[in-house]
Length: 279
Length: 172
Image 1: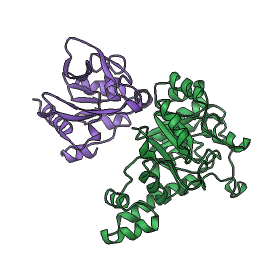
Image 2: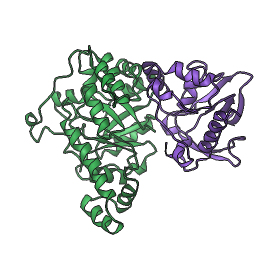
Image 3: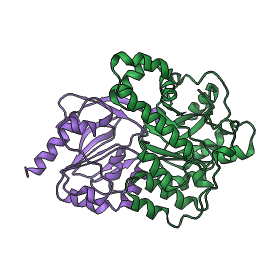
């Protein structure tokens, strides 16, 4: 199981090797990074199995891949490839507007995105083994990931102050399973690891999210859409590990070249937002 | 960390060489061995860890920590390891393991993309084998386990390790 570190989006075996050499704890195999999915438009689907196999053969770290929300047949295909984790992801075009995948029906662990505590608990209730913030993938803009991580952590803090009598109403308001709400209130954290995803472009972004409570970071377009992917990948790993050490984050941030160009949220419009996919 | 607190030990995270100062023992935990090895190198931790080893402090490597401790990495224990030897994530499993000298009754062991010991020197003691391969070994003050003792409710391995650290501290 993955409890910390940096997970990097890669589109081929060469990028996967760069990610592994930089210290990634896993890679996400996909055909287009989110920034390109945004630019290209059209329907974004599960990656070609051959490309996933090539990446599995090129690195020794775990390989994740994305299935569309609700597309359990894509998830079955990924599991048959002996994938290490399945990401039921809003970055791909949703296949089902009402239902997410029943993740308990699978042996492969799932990671799912969430924008707030209720959404995180619904996904865990369906069997997710890891939660990540949705953020706004492919923008290089950290503002949505910050919002989602704060929503999740402040929701947890609030639950932990309630009495047992108050928890059923909290569960109703969160639209989340009561058993999970009780568990979170008691341990004052989720029962699964929480990572940040969606908008990390710099080492300081990575350090920010760790200080806000993320246990690790997903970096998508931020690495391979930048000037110098090798250095940026290492620098983001360094900043995620030493997130409380500004001098090391500063040292990692030097000589990186340009980060990916970012997108202001107001430029996206409601249709351009991926985080609204899923419920 | 929760297990260490539960057995009365004071656990600290080691990220930088300064964090190694004053430790009675060291646990090299699970994770990805490539990632951990790079972290050790970029933070300059290797010499400090070897000093702890040379000073006779107990060292416990679990899962990826077994790999990091081996001949080809930090060289703390005279073994070579095979990464992901039991298979990928979907091949993860649990089993009961006897650990003589550590726990009286068998412990529940969680194997996730786990390594096994491929070769071992004459002074390495095999504590447990599974499917014909060593999964728990010991040489002097270094113990290496293929599995994740922190993922079960049972804290006997942590209790044993804390006691080892206490004995080393007392010079016994």
